[in-house]
Picture (cartoon, helix red, strand yellow):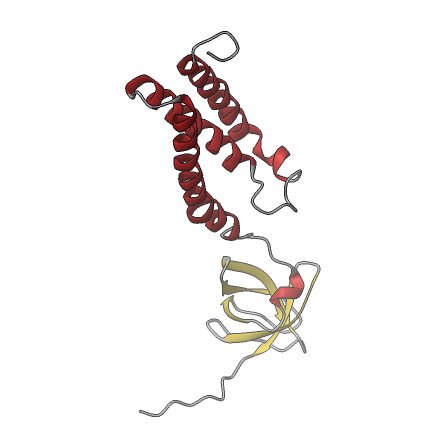
Length: 178
């Protein structure tokens, strides 16, 4: 008996309450992530998973075994620690490190090589595409020295400002011989 109720009932109510809190955490996790960001191994998702698995294991062991209450709690905590550790190291850590932003800055375009898809006239604008890890980026382009650049030419981005990239013809000096 604990709190005037049988232990399997306490485990069941803990499982239900923490399960509901876990569902709420899924919806509002962005708010709580900043609170625990600097503390390693303190992730609300892992703590909630630990308590949920402990209460589920304790409930099942209380219901279907004749072990002592203390032993059941210890076994449930050990199983929960193992499963929560696996969740942390094999699911949460890779997910957090896999965050990739699709954002780029104009400065990050400088020095990249693109391809002209709309010819660039003298003192005018055309369009280029740049293939990057973020995908294909299309930008308005003009010649760096106001020179015309034909369709399908490779260009080097010299400068990027105010949504326009300033480019020069790009000529690769690498020659491969077979």
